[in-house]
Amino acid sequence: MAEPRIEAVEAMPVVVRGLRDFRISEGQTRTHVSVILRIRADDGVEGFGEIVSAPPGKPEEFLEEIVGAVERYAAPALLGVRVEDRAAANARVAAALKGRVWTKAGIANALCDLHAKTLGMPVSALIGGRHAREVPVMGMVIGMMAPDEMARVAAGEVRAGYDTIKIKIGEDMAADVKRVAAVREAVGDKVRLRVDANDHYNPADAIRLIRALERYDLDHVEQPVSRYDLLGSAQVQANVGVPVMTDDMVATPEDAVNVIRLRAANRVKLKVTKHGLEGTLLLARMLEAAGISCVLGHVFEMGLAAVAEAHGAAVCPNLVMPTEIGSLRPMGVEDDVILERLVTKPGRIHLPVGPGFGITPDWDRIEGWAPAA
Image (tube, rainbow, N blue to C red; front, top):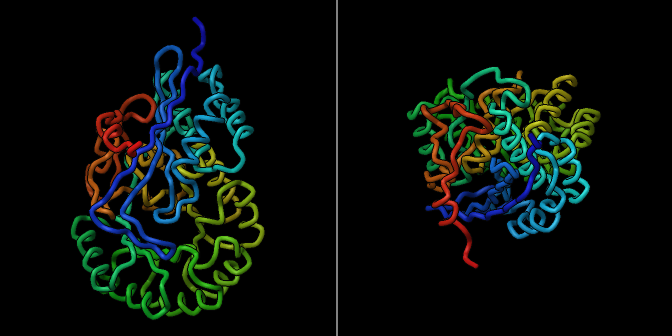
């Protein structure tokens, strides 16, 4: 029997408009943008993935860029490649696209889904075998608002059953201290609290802010300084008593090496949406060997990306839990591009049963969310 080969690649943009704004230090939006990938083999089997246009309000890759990169460059590179030759397929895409880490990650994930389906196994089995069937997940990330409003939302998440809350900060020190203080008071001292400043502060101000926040028992402070200031981040983490986590400084293995060499952080955020499934596992092993812990997940994504994150988390040992696998709930959106419901109870994602990612795309919704021509 002939080995199946890739015969078609389709990029389907979706634009989801929420009910309320979501605000971070870099901007605000009530619109989420992703591109849904469908890669079909000549035996009729299809693999799916999601390329996220992120972060909200200030994306690193725009919808038009993603679709153009897939249709004009990635698709021709993939046509005719054997489904089982994922390494060769990813190498062809890498040769065709410079940078574009989010686009390449989504393609790599869809190739994993396609290959696993061809073999009749879950993606988690294909990439190493799962350690668990359920993945812990934190509550809804809370965007920047007035302190009392953030406290109200955080308390609601705790009442719903979540034991870890993440909030956005990044305005000025006085306002950010008030936000953290209000949320901590609202959720009590047994709930883990994470804060994310999204590159907002210079090192000296970041040190002063984090020292002021230490009394609130934070799990970590994410990206307090610019993604480009590795030495400044190292200065911060050496002078505060709270773990400092970077997200934006690590897009490639070379970036991770620089963080390790400079001790620029003692925790790193990994995203299957940015690194791909196998890239995430590679980075996790590198960082663990250097004594740096990892959190996994992307806080703004739809179900295809979320299930890819969950498969990665189920395979990757020694992550700091819970994961930060996201949804569009911060904008008031409960609908999704897949038919399955991943969060079956608060704080847990149950991996779907079945080959590949184990999900069913909701084509009616995907078509309904297509942007106007």
